[in-house]
Image (cartoon, rainbow, N blue to C red; front, side, top):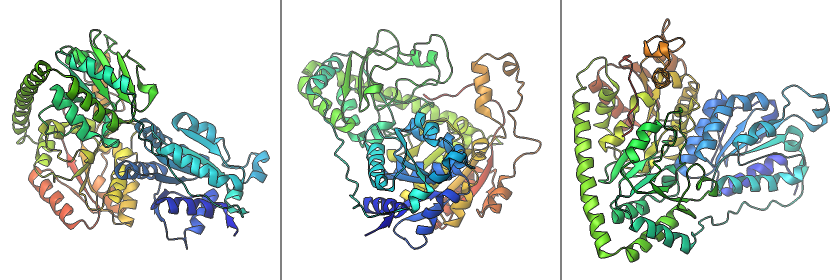
Length: 566
């Protein structure tokens, strides 16, 4: 039976279990939209601009753990989406991104909108290709999906000429079948890792997003407990998914942002286990440039060989599935550690538990001390919100100078899977991601904490939330400025920044009316200054779960000296 190129794509994706295609169409994508008028196996989620479209697919894929599918307009639409593609690349999100290409019969004329999209996307994808024959399209889709979902996961791109989409083929369509990617680590490497860790006098663990994404949180907890080692999570530059329960007694909170503070934080440890994180992706150059102290012995576990010893030499590097590797490491440690070593680990466990409890209580007191300040400080706002978080809440944050890992430091994030932080730092990400997360988890309450500057990069996503009645609670943390840039100006010791003078960093004269803007896009909105009123409104929105709502919350415009992640 003959089928068009675009029909074969839809058949493959539907058979594979894909439920949504996120898109913003143009002429070269019309065969897809035309086919979906009658093909109801997949739901088309329309976005008004490519930034929120890509972010929605990103959030959906991260939350569901499955493939996100995006259809973009040709070169110009792809160009709009490139910042969000960069984010997905840094996150390792499994996305299949497609875009229509101009008719092959026009290519020699260099027609309108035509461009080398494969060359554009190659740096930020695992695989990128243009399909020139309809007979090759099913194989290209199968290869793309397998590539995206095989660790290290990541985005892939297919450029499909419009005539290939419309051309018919009679070749049979073989389904997409994925291999089991859980590769066990070499036993010798795990044994060596266990020996180094068992001999440590003061071990620590650096854990990253890939622990959560590979379902290895429980296994990480077993390793931390048997070693009596604090688990320190990624700094704000890569702080994407919460790798360890925020209320666990061994949660050592996050790494600082800058090299001197990171080095100081890790100085007391002799052996560090690094698992599921990039070591390190720093933000601003600082002296000393080496953030990991020279005396520290490193053991690193990752599914991507590229990450092992990439920036810092490791004593033991383990390649293998994260969960399988941690599980095997725990068993080896349990067999290898002497009674004396286990007693030492128990002593460390008790000491870290007490230390972390003291730190948390001191921080709680700091939060409490700011509750009555008006306008709200970042700690005042986050402290109020911490009181109403449901156990299964999903928090998407793109307001780094407001959120500042406050929920984690207070220990109020009970479901580790529900935290989504920025890793790529291309702005406009959080609003769309929250919509995708809610589509993946319709029964979980979703809270999007967005900076007023970041929100403007993807504000069109509000229309999609309104159109499909996607019940996300959007909170604009509004200080009317690019606060992070002012902080970075201080870190760079720029003379005018140190004097408190800035150009192009204040969003005033005029200020942005987010309430009117949200309402114009179909989302009910209010400006709320009182934290009790805000909490009541958010709780009511979660209870109704009937549609999106936005709250614009003014917070203090006082400049912060730095960000504190631990």
